Image (spheres, rainbow, N blue to C red):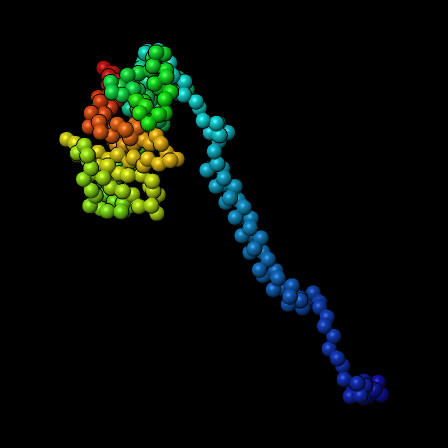
Length: 262
């Protein structure tokens, strides 16, 4: 009888399924959520860790927030510095920063002198060395480690020609050829002047005169020794003297190379 009542009850009132969840039947929505939630958490954690590592490697160290000011001296005693394995003995009055005069191994060293004779600092010349006028006679040098150390003809062909308006250039005074950098390039606001020397091309990137830059400079970068590059900068006013400046710079900086020890 009990069995018959159960059968009749099931015929009289059909069951409505009830949405229940047991341990053996997990909720589909929960299963779907857990499927994408874990990868997102892993992704965010990885991205955060990567950002921290990137920040560690590229963020400036505390000392780099304040640039060391120039601190010239009149002392002419040699400072012994090694840059990229090149041993140098540089008179102290050519060294711009006090920290470099501690000597030793460095990744770079900043120097300066006065045109046209490449004169080192002296108190009587303090005003000239401090000048930033368009006709300032100060010339700045930088010797630095550079393993790539492109020759100037390579730099011209592989880098600069892609950014000039006219790859043929135009004739300019003083035996130079002028190339105007395109305004949509990373060198906008600059002109490239190319001269020919006994050793090949000499490239000068010169900032253009403008209302915002009334005292522009020209920059040359070239290999100096194995793993060491030399760059120097002077006011565009003196571009007419580029050949003499180039010869005098090379003569001066080579005079700083320390004699080989026996």
